[in-house]
Image (cartoon, rainbow, N blue to C red; front, side, top):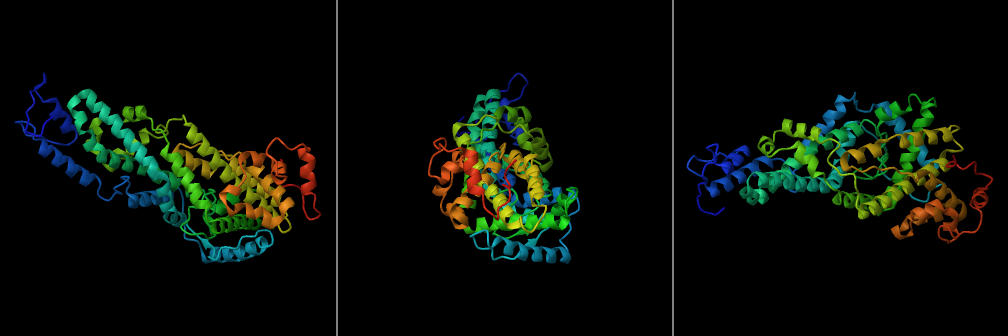
Length: 452
């Protein structure tokens, strides 16, 4: 293809095949031939129209994502603004929870007052964090779409391959808009399940504070067969402990998000699935309805299940870190609540069951990242923190969070006795069970809450 006005001879059908393909992209050409400058001008116009209202780097319209997520949440059930009674009850529970935590945690309480939120408020506040997580995924999908559709175009007409780079911004916008539908649906659905601000184990909130979603929390409480007031109190204690950890350990939340972002950069997109679902002619029909339809076609098919060795390493580190956070929360909540809540063991078990049966964290990770997250180390992590507490006390236990290099590895979590004795996994000669019993044998300590 040259920069001069060029006419291409008609094919058997009487039509210029390149012109026909460009017309499928919404570019009408004059009967006498093709003016490349006009083609490029039309492409630029298409780009400007497609990118209106979207983030130029990802093609995602974040305003639309927020609005759609809220619509999804509203469609799944009533989302009332928390009542004055609910807000007052949370404030009272929060004050009590912090007084229970003070003796058993070295980290200071979050200075921000507790807040009762609707699902819509949770969506609004966490959207910027979702943005950090999913942008690398959109970039990968856009690249895969460009490659897939460019390959289709080149197969139909070799000259079209020269326009592939020109189509890249359109592909990015199409990928962003298509993924927005999936993103909004997943966030909207998960907002109906999370019971507290950081229940997912990640600090998605814009700033550390204790947040409860009363509508969801009360739905979780119903049917447990446990006292409602005790259960809600236990939830508040757990969330207050998490927020103490996140607000005091400054590296923790950024490192978690960085691991997820790194994992997302390595995601392999299934170009075969994209090619099967999307044709070159679809590019000229980038309406919201069309892109939502394409998103439905690709639901569950975007990501290749195979992981690279680097992804496996990232996933192992992320699972260990999530397990250490939740195990620490399990252990601290036990220490704080055991003498005040008679049903504390049953409450802990209810939380574990929720975590084990495809909880909110696993659902959102699978929907948005193709990430099958199974924090299998949480029970071992709770036991690890109990052993470290018995050996080093509250300050020694919490001091491990001072720097990422001090944190235990997965092998350490599985061998806490070796860790506290300064030995590596498998080198301890003492019997594990007897050593654990000695460390946990304290007059004020009940049975190990992490034991099966």
